[in-house]
Image (cartoon, rainbow, N blue to C red; front, side, top):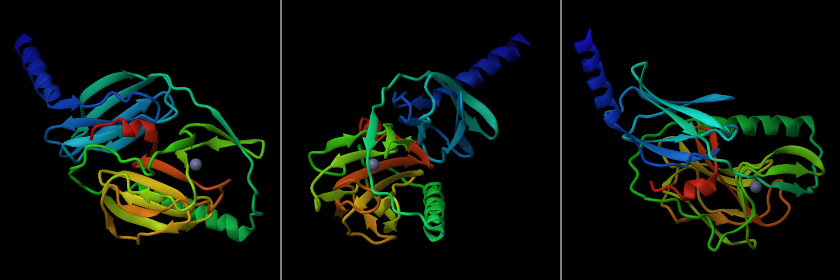
Length: 269
Ligand SMILES: [Zn+2]
């Protein structure tokens, strides 16, 4: 029995030593990287007080995100062949979010517009859930505008026309109309079209279920299925869709889970 226990401990250690956490972005909506040797049939499971999320781990370096709603503790599990091979309790660091009050002209929502909003929401969720394999050559995210000035940070509690509406799921950068917008990383353009809320919008698939979104553009300068390099111009700042003035709304997503772009910028890929 004792021999068996020692054997199991050694096995456990060997498996554990092949997994290495490469980041400590342990905030709500924090993007993180984990290194997993032999990642076949492996997935990452994050358990929190409010929800459980899965991330694929088909690559040696894999991403996972702490859900925004997680404010205290998360349990990181690495599961291989339906067996937990690594578990870590993560204490979530506190982060404060401001309240952002804006007034916008609400367009009357006819049945046709409501249908459009629902269809666009479904389209985006479908796009953001697709996993594309990739080996990252880049080491960091590029900020999508030069000399960025944040007007509304990620996670701000939005009050629109005096009504509590939602959480602000991206960063707003104030910039004059026409300011060039850059791809944050290399990838494939998977959406380049005008949507009801986000106006002229571009979504780029960077691989490993990581996506960036650029909204309210005045001009889109890329086409769907086009490959872009990090730093390449993909459009210009504008105020299309539901917007109060020229700005870029920049969003980062991992398998549909909202990521705080500010925390993603700190990450070494
Ligand atoms: Zn925004």
